[in-house]
Amino acid sequence: GDSVTQMEGPVTLSEEAFLTINCTYTATGYPSLFWYVQYPGEGLQLLLKATKADDKGSNKGFEATYRKETTSFHLEKGSVQVSDSAVYFCALRGSQGNLIFGKGTKLSVKP
Amino acid sequence: DTAVSQTPKYLVTQMGNDKSIKCEQNLGHDTMYWYKQDSKKFLKIMFSYNNKELIINETVPNRFSPKSPDKAHLNLHINSLELGDSAVYFCASSLFRRANTGELFFGEGSRLTVL
Image 1 (cartoon, chains in turn red, blue):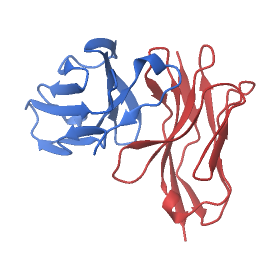
Image 2 (cartoon, chains in turn green, red):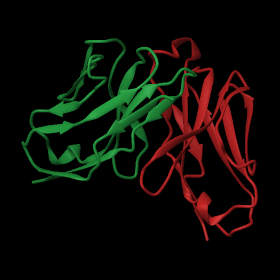
Image 3 (cartoon, chains in turn blue, purple):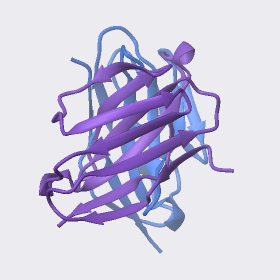
């Protein structure tokens, strides 16, 4: 079945460091891919998405490119801030319309 | 004006009790979901309804019973609560006709603690 694998955390970075969170997927066809973010004590918010191969999603300085050759959708940010501390989830849209999530990666950014 | 709202936000109860969590969305969506997030933050789909019809019913104990009185509401009733039911339950909604590309909108979660 469809699945998402993302790098295990936690990830701890200093402010202004470069961030990469790896995400790969297994699916039939080419599903839409998403990154959601969960700030402490809150629900999930969409961070960015890509709906077809080679699409790049971007938002708030974060980027991810849909790579069908490597079945990947890695999340990157050039310079993280303390306010980016959160749990990040990679997800794909399943055949029944639901989201299938990776296990989440906790990011802590230190000043 | 909250798009997807869940009540209660926190729920503490004893083993064996029955409890309900309610969810409402004002986005005009026709599909709603319940997800369970365990202590390790893993999110797993439980149920999905489209226009009041059950379309996803994952392997969940039959102590869990969803009910959708209309397409704007999806409630979750849990009978005979067990310790392992402690988790955060998230409601979400989306448009079915955008099933391939559209995002899901999530509520803030309902933290259930079973003692």
